[in-house]
Length: 184
Image (tube, rainbow, N blue to C red; front, side, top):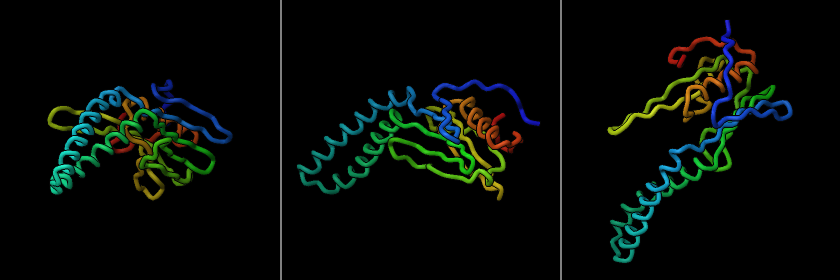
């Protein structure tokens, strides 16, 4: 028996209909992006000073060591830009379920034939470090071969994951079946 509880549209999401496709659009922007900017600026400013000093003094070992950290800083700036600009579209048409991150290129774009999808579910993802614990949510598909495929990650709330799961199941006519590890 499928669950018929009404799920309102969660924050940072919109539902779009385009020709024969339904698109669930999730915006990445969050307060975390704003909080990350001062750290990214400090890190990269420090690395500019570090590299300038190393190169101007001809200390090549110091410059080589700093280049690894400079790459981390560049990645951090790239991540900040993506957090401000990016959206993820989960599109369902008669043939494919497509996940696309844009406009800043990002990993995780994929296309799955809808007839290969057996079930969808939402999983909680907990990240711990010595100072804090953070929780995010991921939506997975179980394919006909019983392999698990992550569709979307880094969702802020359970309601975002459940909304995506339930909308796709409704379009594909899938009954909501409990999956081990699923957040209920």
